[in-house]
Length: 135
Image (tube, rainbow, N blue to C red; front, top):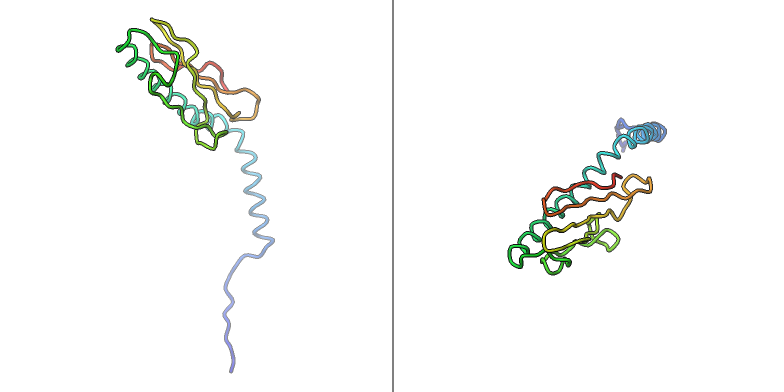
């Protein structure tokens, strides 16, 4: 009995390594250009959570005629950060609260682009998130 085997077209190991090396070089060229976009996308989390803090502070203000210094008083539970095995890239705190004004801050817990500067956003009683420190 004769066995007939048909040879299938395929790539050899050298061809695959060359393709992977080219893809790696292209990634090294493109990655520095993508870092600002990655930082901008991650900062959306801070803006969204700060808006939630603003809404909770406004609700507290309408009930008690003052702003709160505590996140727990306004029923805001900060999401777990990546350092705490969560998904949040920012930590949140209220840095100032009086009868007429408040200020909350979101500080990045990781350095998105590796330059040693951490991204910081703030919001006040006017409700507009502002970037204080650009990463």
